[in-house]
Every structure is written in structure tokens, then in C-alpha cells.
Length: 385
Image 1: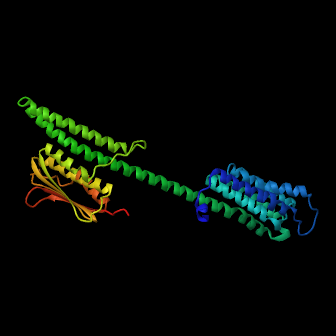
Image 2: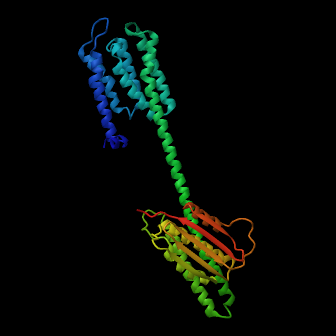
Image 3: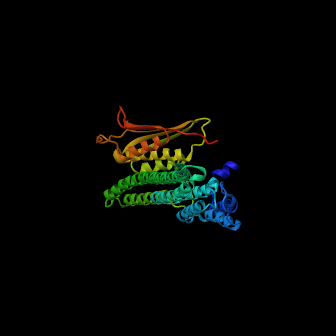
């Protein structure tokens, strides 16, 4: 419980309470106690009410140190200087002013820019040094007075500056992570849209060509092709809405396609002139495949079949998906004849490779020795316990 309280960031009301307690501790106890002390070498002591007033002037400004950090630091340093020079606070009791000054300059360094807080610290350091040098004969040398003034201000300012820089670094890292997450999300959406649009448009183009070819000779077949185009377009719109809907916080969750949608994918490919023989094998003791892996398998098969429709139709295609207890293996082969590649992978193959690599799997694609093309992938997964 204590560790959680220390790690938790305090709310503004809690910070104000802490500042009020510090102000009462310094202004109501330590400051008056130091001011009531008598000088080492005697002398006339000030009235008690003056000591209490000086002590409160040292501590009470700490209650608003987060709101006006520079003003509070200057006020406390000035009060401490006057109190030390006038002897209200003997130099041997300078610990109370040192605590108030340290707290104020820590806050100034944390809350304001480096240049502004450094100027304030330098000016107040000179001011307090004068007070300690003028009272040096009682307890220390003049050099010791300057050192003591530096000890009052410099460490507190340095700690505050380091905290400020650390917070700024954490904020920059948070912004970088947010930008990186946004870029990855945009890439994911772009990949999903590419797979949906490329697959659907390939089928639409094929059926549109058929309808255009037989429009006059066989109006029935042309009408059937148009109905297929309509159905395919509606399906594509649903998929696009599902992908883009995931970006809206108020959109109800819609299940993503997975292994159960593969038969529908095979039927759609038949529209484009590709006979897809789908074989989904579940080995014994195979667990339920995680949704992300199922989506990746679906998109790999979809893109592989789309490439067959675009580049090798009419052709026979065989898609085999094997689910084992540790991984999902995908193999899509066809016997079609394709045009010579330009020596580089297209966006479809790159997208498949990225999906598989994202899950720590292996991906291969290339021509088969006996003709046709083959795409193989293995996607490992872990069963949630």
C-alpha cells in the first residue's frame, strides 16, 4: 500500500494540502523557533512577535509556491537576507531559512523555464551570500558564507531542473509512442483496405468484362454478371465499414473474418474463374486460434487467391490450412500461367509477408517447378491460459 501511494501521482488538491502542511511546519514552527534564538555574542533580542512574524514570512509563502514559484523564491530569499543581516535569525540557526529557500527554488526550477529560474537563482544567491558574508564574524569566514549560500540554493535548483528535464523527456517519449502507435494503426488500416479492395475489385473487373462481352448476345448472362457485381460490391462495402468502424470509439465491436470465413472466400473466387479447393485441417488437441492469427490467415489466403484471379485465371487453385497446437500452416498453389514478374514483389506479396512476420512466422512465395505459383506461410500462436 505504501509503495502504491508513493508511485501514484498526487492530484492538485493533494499537492495543495502538502504545500499547506510545509508552510505551517516552516512558518509556524521552524521559522519562529530559529528567530527566537539569541545571537552567540549577545545583543538586544527582538520582541517575540517580531520573531514569529519573520518566521511566518519565511514559511507561509510556500503554500502558493506552485502558483507563483519565482515570486515565492524572491520573497523568501529577501526575508531570509533581512532576517540574517538584522540578526533576527542568528547565522547559526540558518537551517530554517535554508529549508524554505531550498523548497522554493526546487519548485522554481521544476515549474519555470531553465533560463528564467537560473536568473532568479543567481540573483537570490548573490543576495543571500551578502547576508551570510556580513554575519561571517560570528560563525564562519566570508568564503564559508558564500559556500553556505550556494548549498542553500544550488542543490535544490539542480534537483528541480533534473526533475523538469526528466518529465520533459518522458513527455517526448510518450508523444513518440503515440505517434508510432498512430502510424502502426494507419498501416494496419491501409493493409486491411488494400486486401479488401484488391480482392473485390479483381472479381468486379472480371465479371464486368464478362457482362460487357455478352451484353448483346446473352442478356441473361450479362444480368447474372451484374448481380454478382452488385453482391460483391455490397460485401466489399460491409468489409470497408468494418475496417473503418474500428477507428471509431462509439462503434460496436464487429467480429473480424477468420478461418470460418474461408469457404465464402473460395466461393467468391469461383466467380472470377478460379476453382478453389479449400481444405481446412484441425489436428487433434489443436486449440482455438487467436483472432489476430485467424485474421492474418484469412488475409493471406485472400491475397493469394486474388493474385490467382488477377494473374492466372482461369486456373485451378488449392488452399490448404492446417491448424496444429502450436501454429497455423497455409499453402496456396495454382496451375495457372502467369506473365513474367518485373523482378520485385508487388504490394500483395509484401503485405502477406508483413502480416506473417508480425506474428513471428515464415513466409515464402514463388513459381512452382512444374508450373504455377505457390504461397506458403506458417504463423505460430500461443493459447491464452
